[in-house]
Image (spheres, rainbow, N blue to C red):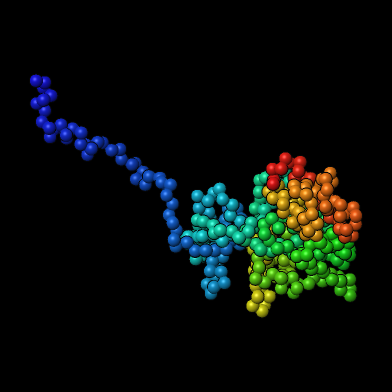
Length: 360
């Protein structure tokens, strides 16, 4: 018989008792990390008004008796998510808005729209401009700087791609007649256009009341080339905005960037009507690398109707066989400005076609 047979069963069990295992203490006395995040059921919904160096100005209790602004930071789990002006954010922490307090954004509500642009047409990296806007107001000058038809085309395409209704304001009509420029967009039936008027003294007068009426009940993002008078228009609509204004360089014909950030401002018509004006920095280019190419043709309403007679898969480019749009322009059935609009359409389509169809 082996000496092991003399060992008591109870003593043998105690040798393997888990309670006898030596556990290393936690020197920092902190909790182990976990991927589980709190539900934040008590989070409040706030509108993001502006972003500045990692801090977000948000509006709490919008439209209510206790409406106030709060400064917030983003939660760590949102570090890879773009939070932009117009977003509806969920915030927790100190939401009093008192000096020295800082709330925390822990989530973003589902967006109804997202207006984006890219650095150029071959860049698929999106630059998010604004969220939840339902209108885009394109501000363009009749002169100084000269209006750029194709830049406006790009704005309209981006608006349609985002499901945003386009509007247009033409400024500086005291310097030039915008009729020829506006004829380029005659085929866009849903485009509402406002133009400034000339006073008896020759000075410009903007239709502020008419523009303001179109803003009521909407969230409208203002876009435009630098120097077209966008900030001046914003200040006229929202006197408390105090947006910086600049001038156009007489040598280069280019405007100076005055608005350096995107910000939401409340428009109030003084009669109980209100809306949101979202002012953006002026841009000289507007890449469409993120856009679905089908939406390019949709921006040209008049040509899109003709394209219904095109063969399936038609590219609408100059060498496209049996293209109904090309034939209509050659035969003079596309209107007096059909050739110019087709040229603009083809230039945009050609840019995407050379990128091997990545944007389709």
